[in-house]
Image 1 (cartoon, rainbow, N blue to C red):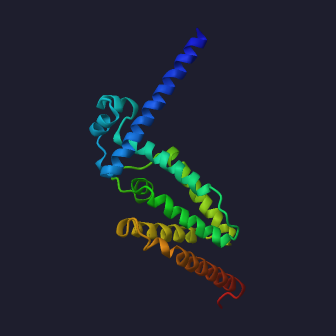
Image 2 (tube, one colour):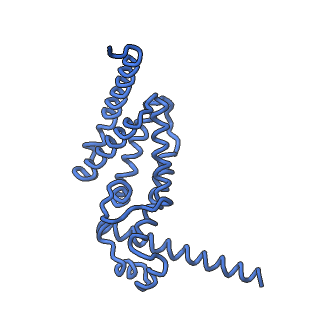
Image 3 (cartoon, rainbow, N blue to C red):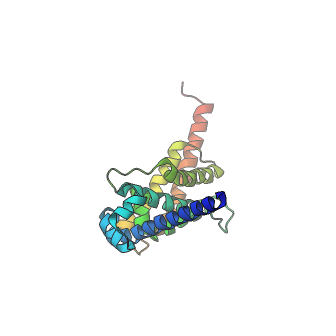
Length: 210
């Protein structure tokens, strides 16, 4: 009896996971065609081949679907950014990360918008779904630390600089290279600025103003 109950429970859980995954994939298909804000539960149900109440049996709200999508996208982002590069120089590794971020972002605009642009009023990812994105950010922090950049404000500057370039590319030259080709220049400028700021701070500590 216990064995049969366990098997039945596993079967139900497997069926539930499969149903949730089908709904999430259907949602991605829909938003890639019509935009993030255009997600309709009724249209989603029709696409997946189920009823609207069935969707709500697996997700309590539209934001719950967005949250599941965010969590999936955040895992993909974390794993993509954690993959090794074929370079060893620390500055070149930083540039390789920027190129990879461009490639990841431009390969799926809807995913990029969900992860980085917060275009959905009232939606905030759950801590569980946001955790992989935080892990990716921690990886960026370690990459900067490897070249001696440790100030929190410089991490903020780096993320703002890179996402700003990607935003421009997505909005104004989709499919082109107008802003992506600025990656090396942006990284050189950023690293030079941070190293100069570090030297200036060291001098102030050694020779404080009278």
